[in-house]
Image (cartoon, rainbow, N blue to C red; front, side, top):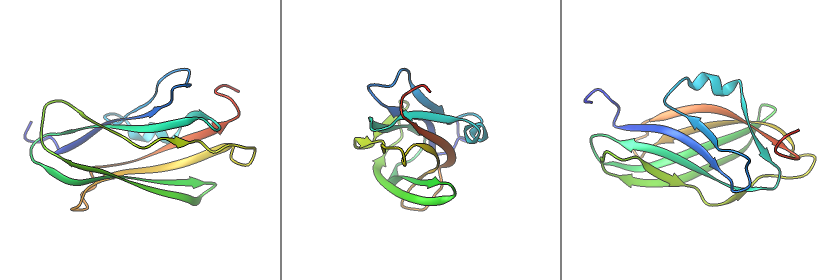
Length: 141
């Protein structure tokens, strides 16, 4: 499709071996709806973020995934992952972040707002979206 963007981000997945089910955001649909719901992550668990994307027409260099995390409106963290350079192909690419540990303890529990951005060396904003994460004592209340 010549009108499709060169880089299409299709999905964000929180990969966690102990999660009761898949934690996935479909990034091809209504991104606004993710501002109204939240992923639940059990405190202290190890997880990785997986980003699925396609490159349609030309090589893209210096892809980056940038994540700003806010708590009660205050920015508490900014993480930048170098994704790399990719050429066009029919299959999706997947990028996995290094293992991270969810915060734990009474003070860490609660809601976090995450602003994510997929960009490159040319500062092209391939996709920006917001989502929410709630750290709880357990997977279910």
